[in-house]
Image (cartoon, rainbow, N blue to C red; front, side):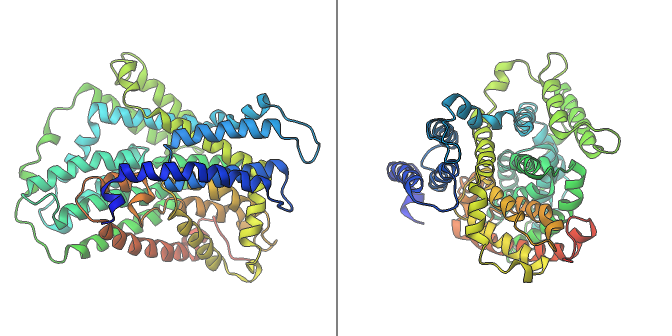
Length: 496
């Protein structure tokens, strides 16, 4: 393993010294270049995006800090630089409003509600009860244990709206499974289970709208661009079958990695925690969760209460004295990573301004102008666009950051499609919002991967080997679904 992985703290200090000034130099360079077809404000936003990508890829600054830096630069540069169209200066007051506009997005309510819900799961230990209830009922064969752990991840995707949170919950439970079986913490099965927990969390980021924050943030950008929207159940109908198929594929990939290892111990004999009496707080949270999922499923049929509204109602209910599950606000404060809300709010603002200033359209022209779009089938176009997103993800450690970087480009690209493909425009963009979750190859491609890697149960090359197979399967199944399921659901249709 390379030296920087052995001493990640020293490596981050080194990259911070280099990457921060490099990113600022890149910003100044982009702003000063004569870029034809780009307005002054568009050029500023493009420069800020380049700076942000360097910071995100190198992780030289914590994401909340880089978000505040982005907000400050948008406020300063957009506020004092004259418009290339009118010559007028916008002013820092209005520019600050643009930099903070993302915090007025309904997506922020979803993200904040998701964090409160995850904190409630941890506080009541309902997540642990559910996991142990599933694992205590499986047979001691490697295949059954792997299947049980993947099932835990699938169930959690509907209940814990954070891939990092889902993986963090599963890791200590999986460590208990390994210990119960009398295996070495660095055994093959331990590695497979931990990697599986991270990968199934990633797969179901696609299948469930509320499984991760960048889904709702991406939908917000799509709605602002074209008025496109989708209910929770419509998302599940379109994406759920793909995630289910990929979970089966992941199971067989992980099972192949076991190479005939067997288990003699009976896991059910030692996992008794799920049989402990339910606490009042667990019962309340279970009831609220079932009600919340029911509201998501029935949106657009029995009622018209949107996902952000239901998430707000859930958050308030969980916090109210006597009704909720928390003893005090201090208990909530210590369990919520407030920097995540800062990062999401500014990231949404950045995405909005990339579209509004024309920077995204200019990037789309640069990236896709040489492609013979009119000669491509829908399946080939889906493959090319998804491959582009997968390659881009290799440089990102945050799906939200990647969403902000590429989704505005795809939105602008959708406006340039020929008339024969225009009816597929938003469907193609939505598929790339799905593909933004494909951080499956490197441990640094997603926070849930890093949670798994931090356990020390596997080497990076093991994760990469499984991740490459899973990514290849994802690309191929995306093409398959573009030719079949997504045409049957009406998300895509053959070119006319």
